[in-house]
Length: 434
Image (tube, rainbow, N blue to C red; front, top):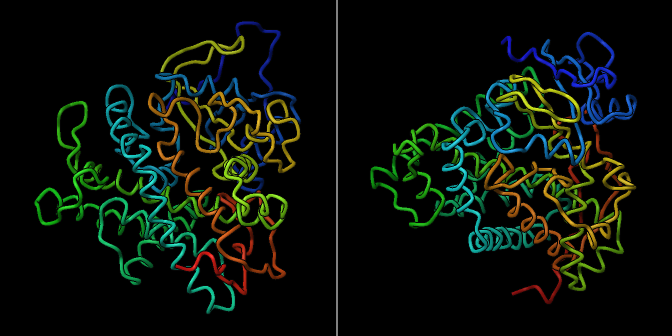
């Protein structure tokens, strides 16, 4: 634990690293949520400051330059960077996220291969089929909670995409409930987190059984399906992937796909608040739909930060960052950094018309090269799934938005519209009925 107590040493004593007030700011982080780092960056007028969280010293950073520093290949490890209660729900031990060096590169290459253009198209097509089935049901329902429905749609689509036969309603509800609980409780402590840990164990037992069945020949998914690829994967050591780790990576495909439901709920909220964009998307402006998706991902909160521990000493901004330094990159703060976005608190899809993406400015799912580093391998599929849902909600159905609490709490991590985004009186547009 001694190495995690290090903070940067300054090459120039005149450039003192600002320090947040208070001996330990853990309670402040829990109370302020997404705004914890953002407020201190503003108050201290610095993109980097030191603090103490969970009695550990931490360097908190934001911005494009900070993201470049953080995502330099080989510079940080994710091992020991997250509390176990968060790690086990969002990544888990043995996953690609906590691998380094050749082991990480080989595992990441395997996962990136599962998200090629054709595979993403297949996932989106499966999701669209699920949406159309839901739309038909919604016409008979008095009200619909978009967030809850999106989780079911994405879970069913993801399970079929990895190589499983279509789930029945009971199995689908169970898998959705377990995967959703992992995401929802990741930023919490206490009973909500404990319950999610139990549900995660159930999902892992299910995933291990799937891997065992494929390896024993009792289940034969399509040859290029994620289930088949993961079950047969060999790591850099040439050994078949440990059955537990194979189950973990399988879950790490399903759970993040279900997590996209939050972006979809935010996207439908944004359509409601920006009817001019809804009209453009309904009229077939696909370019605007993609820009709208990117602005949803930038503007609305997803996960607040990523963390790493320095693998070796290095220099950054006249500072010597020592091996073992615990660094937190503020994702939400970077996506709302005035130096990058000008008017970050305004929802404006048009900003992406001329935006040249560096890989380190828009980072709701991490930054850098997804092949070489720890950026989310499924980010492209997230964009595709959200854009597809946007086009369906804008053009395939008509609905009304009743009075409800549409506030988004920045204290709750992860967050979403308080009501889950309720719609009612859904009608399928005639031209979209098969």
